Amino acid sequence: MIRYELVLVPFLLAPSFALAQNTERDKKVKADRESFSGSTEWIYNDIDAGIRAAKTSGKPILVAFRCIPCEACHDFDEDVANRDPLVRDLMDQFVLVRIVYGNNIDLRRFQYDFDQSFAIVLMNADGTIYGRFATRSERPESEDISLDGLRAALGSALRMHKSLPEYEAALEGKKAVPGPYATPRDFPSLKGRYQADLDYEGAVAKSCIHCHQIGEAQRLAYRNEGKSVPDDVLFPYPDPEVLGLTMNPKKAATVARVMRGSIADRAGIREGDEIATLGGQPLISTADIQWVLHRFPKSGTLKAEVRRGEMRSEVDLMLAPGWREGNISWRVTSWDLRRMALGGMRLEPATEADRTKNGIGADELAIRVKSVGQYGEHALAKKAGVKAGDLLVAYDGIERAMTESQIFAHALRQKKRGEKTPIVVIRDGRRISLEFAQQ
Image (tube, rainbow, N blue to C red; front, side, top):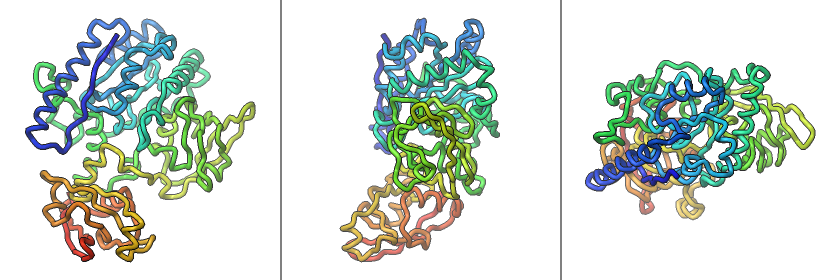
């Protein structure tokens, strides 16, 4: 039985403690490889070997991408790695491949939400993707994914595999969309810094491109060229909550709740409905919904086929400009957004007491500075005079109410690196004007 432990990535730790943590991370990455050594069920870090095995056996492929040092999804990953009895019979019908580093991912073949530390792609040996599985959000892991949900996804993928000609046209939209970079190592911010393979004899964790670094590199490719960051890069893989949907993690693309007055509510989607297809693509999980939303334009009509008991119906989801702009502050890559847009500040909503005490209306900006970075470019706000506990009431001349995510969006759309950003904070009842440079 495969067993291993994980440790949290130390983003903002004191140097001596970070060094000790890095040493521990190296042990974990090496231990993971050792755990799978000699495995007859899993092919380790070799997608090409998995494809060859699938061509020989005729089986579909399950590719599990896992960032070992990241703690999120630890328990679920362990269940999958050990082929939990709830899903073992279905997993045995797949060629199983485990990829634990991002250096060599073929981005022309594999695209998913890189803010996740765990993701599954179910595919055919010819590259046809049956679906994606695993979702991460601001909610607890147990509210996003489950083994029951994985079982449903595996079953759906196996049905498609057995009747591929029937599904082939509908699956066309699940293919990765070609981009300018073949692998993560080709991004300008990562180029020349990493080798194709991990350095298992040295600082192995440091030699690895972690999943979140791919998302950061996508944004930096625009930011460092002085370009506005596109919406699908800034707000990637939108949670179905932007439509007003909370999905049931134990079923395949099944609605648990619908927010009253939301896009989905107006379209007629109801609790318990199964979204069979979205944008013409068959769905096997919430991650599949996110893939369709990720590729959808800034506005338009998104068609869905809904199953309600024995009935099937088509509904139109009307997506207006700005539809995808949900909360992204939970994402791992928001750490780098705070460096770029906020000089290292971390923000949280002000309380009603904060607003009342300072005479700030509900439609006016009021965000509490939860913390400020202490090192490098994350310390620019601190150097400018910002302190934890300050109340941010103006950003770049904007005084209307905004969330931290909306501030990110303004900065990465409107501001360039090096531009000064004026802000106003309230501290001990006094309004203080400060400024820092965008990064």
